[in-house]
Image 1 (cartoon, one colour):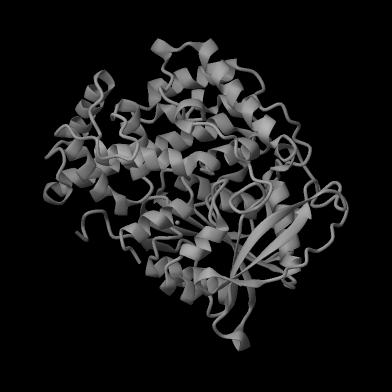
Image 2 (spheres, rainbow, N blue to C red; image 1 turned 90 degrees about the horizontal axis):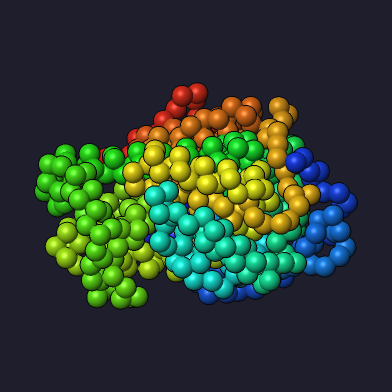
Length: 502
């Protein structure tokens, strides 16, 4: 997350590289914590790596420490170097270390001409230690465990029991860390990292969930940011204070982008290759068929048959980037012909790759988001979602129940108001008009809430604005990050529509 719980920029980069393509009020710090000492050493790929020790509990800055993993790509022009640029790819759970390590060299070269680029694994994630790992089979016991709950077949007792087992397992394995996993804790870590590299002010790109960290940083540390680029942005206030509402908005955006996939297929039947003039009806027929009887998927890594819930997961993954639409269409055509291997592989990859991301989501968003602490609202929201969302109802309501069952106080979390003080450097928010994970309305609302911010609109589809390498977006980001130049009010960039470039 997400912020979404469904995707991070790290997974987007992996997909794009595979396709050979060029995404309660708290104080800032109760007492000052020691600045971490970074011992940078050469690591694979020509990068430098280091470990930062930061307080487990920022309320006890001299107490127990945890370790954050960092990676650095040095500036290509030290004489014109501005400072360090920290990158958060999203999640929670997205690895900033992997993101920098796997960024296409041309993109990395563009950013490092004036900055040392630093990726960090936030507390509990990736190579940082301790690490959140609930050690559950996400497909059977996690947030998006199958079979998905439906009102007509709901066993509320079994749903609650499964959610409680998952929460209990996470607390057993990471109970010391989970009370200190809020986005405000990550923002406080980020300020220590800024000081550790010797920068007076922070330069930062926060994508998706990383935009929430950026908005939190601006609110907790007014005037301490030099540049905050918030891409695929989250509406921090609604996300934090009305989470059931915000997840309905996200799920509606998944449905919107899937409808746009159908429209693109219908307009380009030769390039799409699925469903002819009515791919939506073909998809619905396939979904009904798979709900009734799974089909073999012998070529997938798990070898499990493909069923209707698997198709729903595969469809959600396909909305992340229109670059994935041709492969999704090919997988649909193969499934229609009786072979579910390609789509089932997408599902295998989702559950394997999402495991830590979802565990981190539970730990972080249970603190950040003001979910109800009792069961009935989740059951009501699940029933409501089933009537609203024909494909993606699993994303809203029933699947949110574990977040309300985590028995941890929110002492260190930040619930707003989210503001970028008038005397601070203005933030740049980038939102995509048809983003499934972070709807465009969220970018508009975050820009308004921050006040001292400017919105760049990316007209197109997908959750991959950061990794799309669109020349217009990249140029605007570089002008802002390097020179502090904001785009004019109402500025936009436009993506080439799906299949048009095929």
